[in-house]
Length: 358
Ligand code: EPS
Image (cartoon, rainbow, N blue to C red; front, side, top):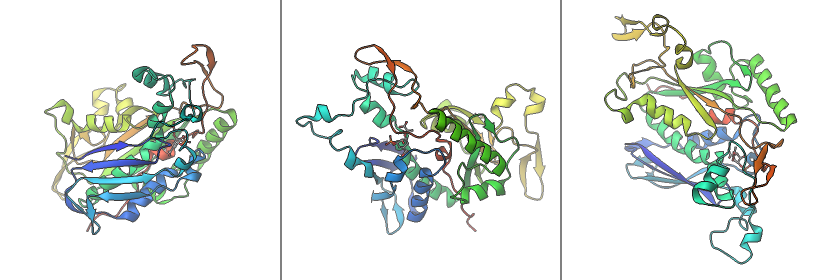
């Protein structure tokens, strides 16, 4: 079974990941892993941190001579920003450490700050936000790159693109070729396939930047080439749609997940929603006339593209701060502001295409 854990504070020494369950012999293309990490750092509306970091995965275990060896994999991504935080977040308790600490006592509405501080009885949300930070996704991207390298061996392609930023939404369906194009293009500011819509998305980011606000959006991930039969209908926690939903919802700021046309389907009649089945005699396989189910029926892949959408709320760090209550004095204060992104939609989207194996 493929499993992973991540560790690391946003301003600690490093992010680390531990991965288990990859078979021996999977080629580990370090350039590919590096490119995935680089892509995560790009996108319009990102904060100043990306100018400090140059994320790179340093493999410590489980990969030898360019291939997995079946043993657990350990990797490390350095936080270059650590040198600016050593005094604020030392590992050992030291003299004067308290004064140097960059305390955060005005929890941001919508952030893990308050709930996390209550959970651990902290009088400062620093340790909470350090771990709740979207910086953690760098470790997940490195792990995801390894998973993609395994899937590549089976001819599976995974692409993704931006559907909406704030109030600006793509109104037409994207073709596979268009999504491939935007995945290859590192210059694409918001990873939207339609230049006119993307220009309006950029204006939306500019608007919130000027207003001291933030903006969310929708990204879509598509997996092509998976055979029918992955996942299962027999046990609730093994259903693939449930597992995918958990994976997407666990990304910082994602508040909803959609599989196929799930949201629209809930307001339609059954006759309009189900994908009719036919048999393609040339390709000797069952097929569907449409893909409103998003490639999953009963928690099992049906051989069609898997289509999953993640809905991101606007991130909770705002220059135009909202009201909150101080953790210690309980007084009404403005929520804390820390350097932040204003739009993370293009970072949540981080897949890239690859050629099918011949
Ligand atoms: C991020 C790093 C963080 C944030 C952002 C994403 O760095 P810093 O806190 O030093 O600016 O920019 O994280 C958040 C959105 C968040 O809420 O913490 C990154 O590497 O992606």
